Length: 95
Image 1 (cartoon, rainbow, N blue to C red):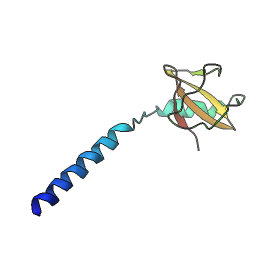
Image 2 (image 1 turned 90 degrees about the horizontal axis):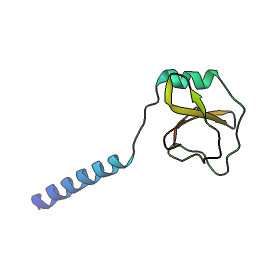
Image 3 (image 1 turned 90 degrees about the vertical axis):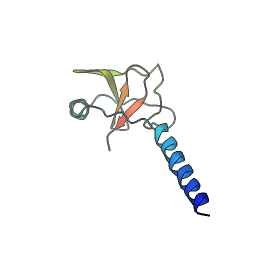
Image 4 (image 1 turned 135 degrees about the vertical axis):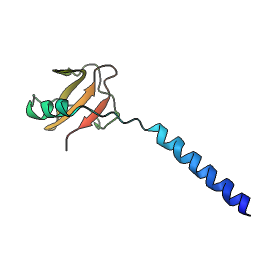
């Protein structure tokens, strides 16, 4: 019985680490976040929901962030959204 419980505990612990590896968190530099909040631009309309991890379509023009060339931004519904320039994935949304 003790071995079964130990085996189950090991399996649960291993599955928890597998789930943790699925989510990749990108920490956007604070100066980039500050810049985007301080420099609002005209909003864009995007069909569907905008969420962290979602890709922004190629027809949406991203505004580059000075001193953070890996990131660009847009405003959706008065909310700043930071996107990676490489794969156009949303990595930050202001609250």
